Length: 328
Ligand SMILES: NC(=O)C1=CN([C@@H]2O[C@H](COP(=O)(O)OP(=O)(O)OC[C@H]3O[C@@H](n4cnc5c(N)ncnc54)[C@H](O)[C@@H]3O)[C@@H](O)[C@H]2O)C=CC1
Ligand SMILES: O=C([O-])CC(=O)C(=O)O
Image 1 (cartoon, rainbow, N blue to C red):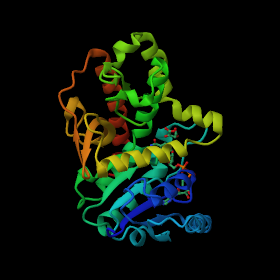
Image 2: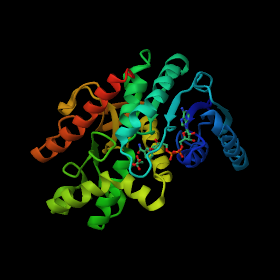
Image 3: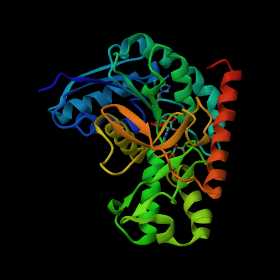
Image 4: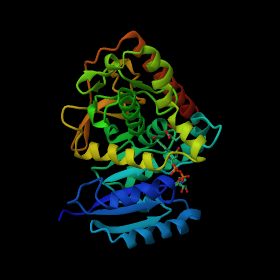
């Protein structure tokens, strides 16, 4: 057996945590040969509920679960962690836009960035799921000057998976026929799910759909506003699907994206595709052994250009807002 990998999860007593922890402990993140030690961070009032979740983890008798530590002090919980899944944040409720959350969550990600900087293992990889995910990741990254910037990412894999599901349903194909999906920009209503580079059964997806109006008026808004639709229907935000996407994201980052395909991740822009350098924006990436590369050389037509620019503009605004608040 390998040595246990230390995986930190914040907001571990929350909705996403309740789905995520059990999948990590069962081996879905690191594989069936790698034991895992869970490091669970919560705010003090939620530690009691977290103990109940830990009792349930015990009761699963997961063979790969080498240990569980809980606490409310990031400096202690993040000590030596190899993977950090930053889920804990104040979730959006009915009628709230992500911008409203910037300030409330800024303080959380400033402190956690510093704690990771000072205590995480040298090989740490950090994924931010808590909203507003892209800018929270920017805040954490900016407060962790000793951690290489390419170790930080934010989750747009849920949007990616939603886009695959919507496209597959439209053309009547199984989801496994869909490849080369891309989410560009922010995990918000401005995101751009791109069918012009996606494929269905090896064929260009936009050509297979052959309906620009459906792409503009149905596909893009359905994917981009799916989070709000779930809140409306369920009364609380996506949890199981968000946990599933968090696993997909971190698993592929650590263990590799599918051969011949790519995935969507929000990472620090290096200026590729004219996206302002330094913001955390979603790109098509290939991944391997904990590294990623932004896919290069895709042709961007005027329609896609306009959509990418609009979402990037929102990220630039969010960056300016948190900069003004002194968070980065
Ligand atoms: N990027 C994405 O695709 C998605 C992101 N989300 C976001 O994920 C986040 C978590 O969602 P849920 O689990 O449904 O929320 P939840 O409210 O059920 O759980 C959040 C947990 O975080 C904890 N928490 C708050 N501040 C904390 C801190 N400083 N340190 C550690 N824990 C802290 C809370 O006590 C709570 O238990 C929200 O921000 C939500 O908007 C949700 C769905 C998709
Ligand atoms: O919309 C929300 O607040 C939750 C979320 O990020 C999503 O489901 O995409």
